[in-house]
Length: 79
Image (cartoon, rainbow, N blue to C red):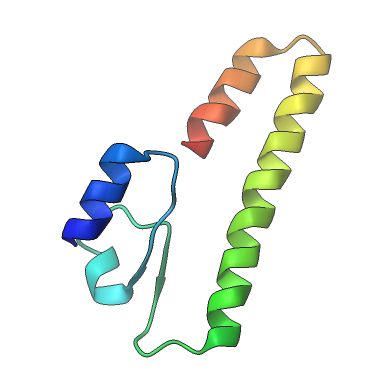
């Protein structure tokens, strides 16, 4: 838990993956059961990246349309 707090303080945009027990205590992006299989972890990481990418693309679409308040809200969700 100490490492997650330090990472979040120094790099607030970094998402941390924790086991289910610890994730309930902190603001973790993804939780998992312990032990985790490598394939399962890779799928969770890919899904996290895909979600962030899709929100960025959506923000770009709204920016092109001049909807800057919507873009601001989307990027606030990404943090």
